[in-house]
Length: 397
Image 1 (cartoon, rainbow, N blue to C red):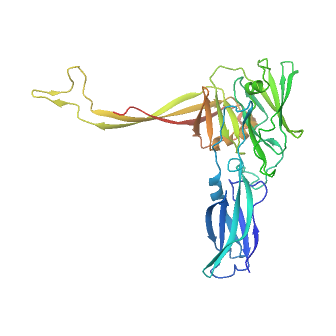
Image 2: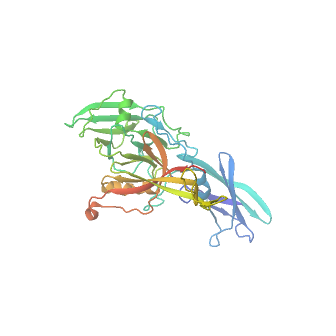
Image 3: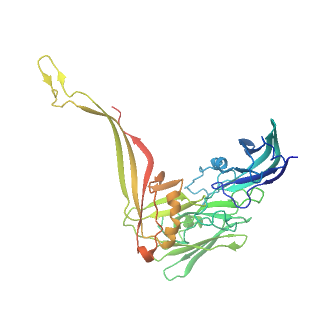
């Protein structure tokens, strides 16, 4: 008599939500009985947990998510193009997904028996939405973003967006349109060979792309766009001749302000782009450390408050300081669909601000977010504050 069943999570489950494993043993009625759950990743044991049976049905329930989510990695941000428009494919061993093994045994009467049943589970790195929790996401080829498929992009801007695909070949097709809405440049680029490893063909592959105007121009090896306010470009990808909805990018030539692009991990675990093109205000906060001393000196014939250089003595010494910077960024009238998407920026665990060609990690300070709709709020800009995670220390006296 021993473990008779083990039910593991299945489908496109995520490490960022509960991962319940359910075991049953014929011995669960013993008074001192406990289920023993062992978790393994890459051959290494992560944890061993002993669980008492549920009184109502004798089964053992174990949620592996608190352990497994610590194995997910966020170390693959690569803003500089590696091969033209291709950026990077997060791997399947902890970046976009990982596979772990659960082994279940039992413990009673002072005897522990391990690995009486086992199973492998593939989990992905995305966060469940507020609605339709535990409803599996589609495995179909698609863009890995919830943003609307239209965006305003500057000529030299990066436009990071990811794709999910399961084909053996992948192509990027671009159509550039002139002010008369005539397609004057149509290009199909083969990106096969720049994909994430397939892991035996069972894992959905993820690739991070830069499909901005400048990147696509470099991709086709010619300056193919006559930039003006009416220029736009459609970009779609194909896999095994199956295409998806195109992204339509409009060229934005408004240079009244120095805009800031934020690149952030979205709810799919891939990077999205949020463009803040209106007035961006930089501020700083300084924390000073001081000590006090007397502001006079004794001499043989006087008590002096200043010296021969007419420099007064200090009564308080600033011996150290720490300075942090904050940006207040303003987005130009997001649409209703963009407001429905931009909550992902507020909750994102990893955000980079592009400033003068460098990429600075930032932390979003906003803790509240309102899903604006124009029918009751009218046109409204979006303002956020973000801390530049680059503390500087002042002179030490």
